[in-house]
Length: 184
Ligand SMILES: [Zn+2]
Image (cartoon, rainbow, N blue to C red; front, side, top):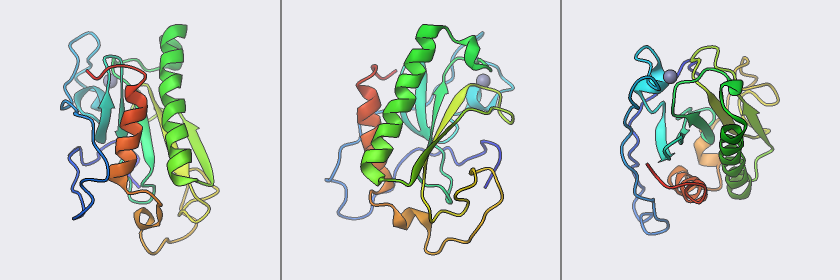
């Protein structure tokens, strides 16, 4: 997997025939960068969504990382450029953790994963974000972290093993986090 955030940032979904009526995607604005000083021109997560944009509020956004080995891999990104968790106020930390917990809950309900992994590293892209990753005992790295060396090859593709399609999963995540704050 890629270690940076150089993902395909196209956030539009391509639906399989016949699936379009099974769920409703909330209307989402396109990603737009913040103005300075919240914006750092050298920072990838300031310039780009960093994955498939699922929902964006005034303070945070939820993206899906688009990692083939880990299809249910979401990130909660603080929109203003800060590097460290303690750069946020306690109230902001509570807001962000509320989003992280909500994404986790949806992944548990929709996918029944073996485990949820939460992580905030930022060594490669030092812009505050939390990883929320549904892990399965069959995935390529389990029980090691997703950043470790793979332990096995997974065939057929991981995405085909999920009990919920990615567009439907995105829609469920978007609906759940939308209840925490309005779209921006
Ligand atoms: Zn940034």
